[in-house]
Amino acid sequence: MLERLQELEKEALGALEAVEDEAGLQAWKVKYLGRSAALAEITSGLSELPKEERPAVGKRANQVKVALEAAYDYRAEALHTESLARALQEQRLDVTLPGRPMVRGRIHPANQTLRKILAIWAEMGFQVYRSRDVESDEYNFQLLNFPPYHPARDMQDTFFTTEPDVLLRTHTSPGQIRVMRERAPEPIRVVLPGMCYRYEQITARSEIQFNQVEGLAVGKRITFADLKGTLNAFARRMFGQDVGTRFRASYFPFTEPSAEMDIECFVCGGEGCTVCKYTGWLEILGCGMVHPVVLQNGGYDPAQYTGFAFGMGPERIAMLKYGIDDIRYFWANDLRFLEQF
Ligand SMILES: [Zn+2]
Image 1 (cartoon, rainbow, N blue to C red):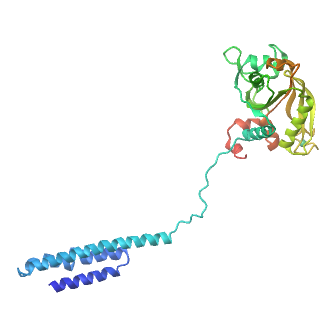
Image 2: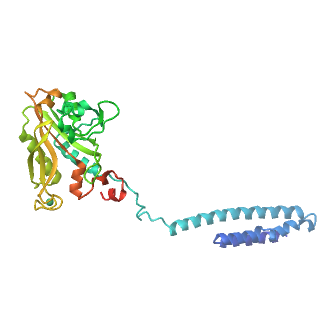
Image 3: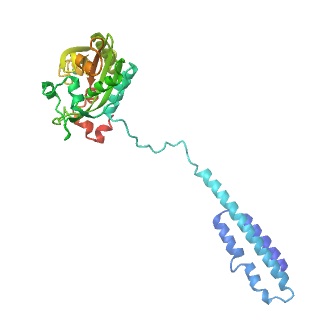
């Protein structure tokens, strides 16, 4: 019987060596360690053996069982490692495949234009000065030379609040008074970007809110020639080196003299088209020399100091540049529009 156990162990271990996969391993386990395996039969048949043989056979049978179980665990572990290694080899992750694209947001077209404008002015040494959206009548109108009941107020339909004399700014110009009062008598070169609000009928050409970028330079011996040279330099950087410009006399209460600056139509090159309404010119900004009353209100002596100011609308410039025919698109939050920029 001991010889039989010896043979059984040898046979089982040999068979285990030949096992190559998980299924073979399970079959081996049933055959050699299962309920009806030869080893189990020997163990359950111990009582039929002569009494003196039983301890030795029982002990040996147990040794064989422990040895086979250990060999099984070892082989199972080895097979598992092998199959893992094979899987890694066969189903290798290709890290060179392009990943899933991320959905990226983008800068709003009005802000893109605003940033471009600010970058150009920054290169020319103008600092960005931000001021409040909610203003007093004094800063929005009176200190800018719009006295109460002045007809120029009619040009800017205003959102008044229930608080007397508190309103939403109709232009970024009140920031001019704020920066002058903060810096006087130092020279100033700033741009004032921000949202402005007007109580207007919303149409393809007018909105109740829009961005403005205003500029202000104050110092000694600043002339209209400085204004023209600086604005021409801006136009060339914004619209191209060859762009032509022209100045037309205009009126604003806070500048004297005042002008509108036009640039040559970049769509038709001055030939005349629907964008420029067959004039060959596009109006892009208003400007002028700072009115002496405004300089005084800002804390500068107009006998010693002069300055120029200008203002433009980034949405209007974006409309001209991209051929957008309706200003309402800017704040309608329609992704089909916004995704085009
Ligand atoms: Zn044109």
